[in-house]
Length: 199
Image 1: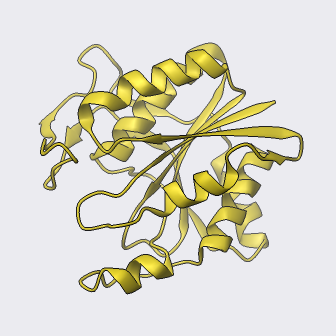
Image 2: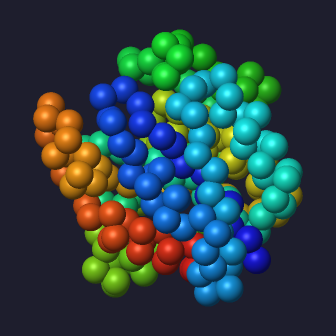
């Protein structure tokens, strides 16, 4: 079995991205017989769709999981739905902002994950990792990525979803104007490994 993970590099004032660090740690490893392949997406509106489609077609995985930073959240949050809408107050890494339009004019207004996130939240909490369900992946590039992941997985019977993670300690220490909760990288990595194992 193969799990394909998508994460992101630094963006805006966030000089590090915990999703990138965790994906680099996991790339090439096996978790309970599941091989891991990690792809770091650019934080740009223009390239995310193409890369996600190409990599899913290339690897033909059993599970596709997007992982992104949600600064301000204090738990691992598993996203229930991606919405067909892009809007942002901060620009992407090429200076573009989401302008309040549909991601896909012909697509559904929302797409639900086919992963049992309710059960995963229980498993994570039972392993002393704070976790919860989220009903909003926002309208920035994480939501965009989740929408494209689900568009390219559900129709093929592949499991697909998205997980938001908090800041990590080192990021909060390095960027002095960030005042937000954090979680240790080892705990977040363990959470992703559990999600992969039980999805």
